[in-house]
Image (cartoon, rainbow, N blue to C red; front, side):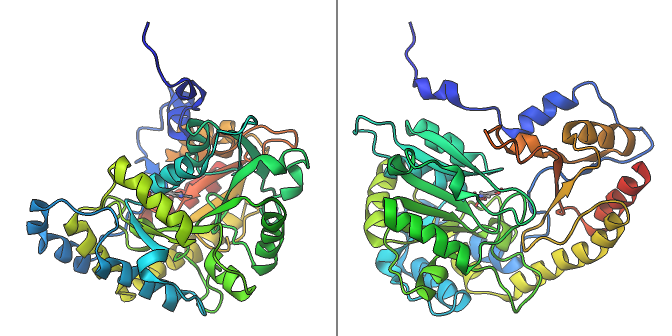
Length: 397
Ligand SMILES: Cc1ncc(COP(=O)(O)O)c(C=O)c1O
């Protein structure tokens, strides 16, 4: 008999696989061109300064890269971090590690952190709704997962939903700010509450911040984990932030990001990664240096998203109770009769617009399923297409 890692059986189908199943046999009107707003894949063009840096370093393919990354890349990441997050002091050598996008880093970091040698099953806490990698990473590491719902109106994690008997077994807590799918950003008081729990129970915090650069007001940029710690006079002990070029710089195919924070955890993470085989190729490292050192293309990118929200929201607001998110390129739309699946199917059948039912991004808990009654709309398509989709959504009502 074949032996397999039994945890593989615990993995849930990915939201897009569930969507395909739910849409089987449904066809949109033939006269309408389909508009895809269900996947959060950036669609704006990749800036030339990144593709040029990539292609001018293709000779780097002849060498094995080292997992720790080039010192110049770590310096570029540290430089970006310190100009983006006021007051944060970071040591490029020990407190930064390049990763191949935040997805693999979130997954691999979980494998590094979870310690199953104790007699009690370790617990990982995930927001709910959530980015499904958190759950898969926890299960494959042999941990149990505990969800904290992030309900309306402010979509913040309700930590009190974790009971007192569970907290001592929690080894890792994921937070996502700006959140996928709600766009909600944790403010300093929310960080303070989470840090208080951390001081009590000693868990590690993994802060997923890959949407941090898609915001609407230059005066209120999303707060990051390291800035929150700095403002509260804390060290980075047991705290790691994950960021990525995918959304910031429209390079989801480059596979480049970095993690920053606790030097002790990063030393272990580097050891793990050496065996995992996740060193970044040299051309990608040079392209990443160019990307982290330039802010103009990020400002331009943000402007495109702002224009879309500014024009799409007033249309949708005629019929839907929707407000601008704190950040991110998502609209987390409450649907009229609370049946997100039915709404998604109808929108496709009648209007050829594809969105993602909120229930596919969330789990049932004792406190309900916080994705139910919502659909996630990613404003990634060109403005004209987003406007057309919004018009069709209004006609549908
Ligand atoms: C919340 C969240 N975290 C992480 C990722 C992974 O992005 P990447 O691996 O491209 O950095 C995504 C991608 O959609 C995401 O939505």
